[in-house]
Image (cartoon, rainbow, N blue to C red; front, side, top):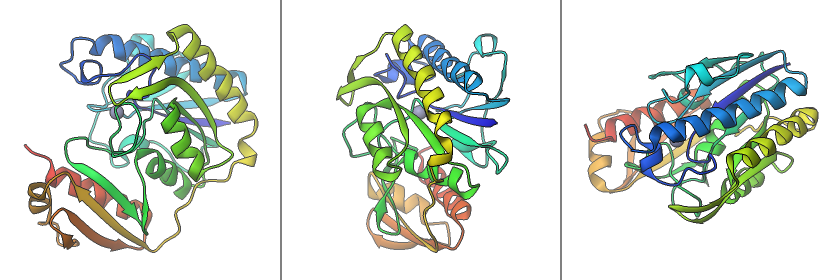
Length: 271
Ligand SMILES: [Zn+2]
């Protein structure tokens, strides 16, 4: 059994602020440790459930967060960027299950440190009229390869976001969001124990969880936080302007659509 883990940071217990999540934050190295330890708990659970190959993809910010000397010895890990599939780099149809660890709610919703791919640029992403954040889009990338997203870890709002898309998914709620920058957390020992157990539960029922697929063709609308970002991104020929802050494009292929989404965010991002 091959298991893929996408490891983000905002949904890790004890992480509540840019001081944790940003490269230059004073508590960043502590948050990196907490993230690596939660990943290791997931690896432990996967091994106990029978995994024979585990790949971790570092999917937060710089994508250079996992602390190599602390990473579980039975897993391989990808760090660095850019990566064509970003938070899902490394997944393919040979995997049996995908885990979204340390994930968070989409921009505009309740949920600790909520955002959608770029908190500086993106207000919302719609695919065929439905709003998606990182959880939905990453689960759908796994779905393209026929891989079910079986476990999401993070706050209660991240859990409910995925449950609306994949009712039978397992969730490990390691913290309760109080507001965007405040949460009530499990201690590291308890959050790691919960993640390990939920990983075992999720892999034991993986055959009951269907891959999450967004059916094509795709009409994508991306809204930015202000018109200046739309102005910068409209150089991409595929886009059509919906209003001052919104672009629309169409694609028949989900991975292609995802690549356009990322291209627009990159173009819009201030240098
Ligand atoms: Zn992140």
